Length: 297
Image (cartoon, rainbow, N blue to C red):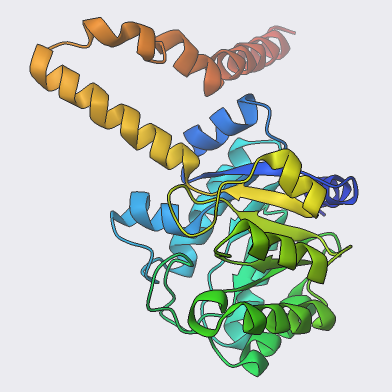
């Protein structure tokens, strides 16, 4: 069993983990862990943006997203919560997805009720599957789970195409079939977040803070007090990074050197420390010394 599934369960039982920033690569995931966040989120939309250079419109495949989840899970020691879109097919595909995500080290995932091809939950033009189809997906996920601590989050994207009442009704049905957590995507106001909180009092909840989009940015303390255990900042690191990169590249093109930006850049030494060069070098030296000592006996 993956010990990080139990860790995630413990964080949820304690009312957290609170803010969980999203990563699309191992380097960013390590920065998130280094900053002290108790978990990392692997964003499907962000992965499509960085891995394919495309939008979040269902382009990413199971193997492409799972490969990112696996590498990121291996790179950090904290629990990893992963996006698995609609489960990548019918019930047999959902079962395969759950088994794969468990095997590669994720501590939990969310699966949504959109039709394929899905779209980012904050886009226009989304369509949701019939409630029964999502219930089949969830039952398949629950049946495929082998680690009882592996967290299955039911996400509904019905707020946009069908309205809040439909989204709440769907979320209740998903919770009743056995989903561990409820994720009502893209509420449009603080009042809607409060309504979700009241509807699901005592149920672990997910809130997704997407900057300059549909859902207002609400401070962590307020969301935790409302019962939102997991507060995703799915693409904050991507936005921060791309903003800094764009500015830095403009300076480099204009000035022909990075000299004026050194105080705003991670140093060569900091970079090697983050990726564990010293630790790996020390392990290699120890291994060589042990083998050489054995040969001399």
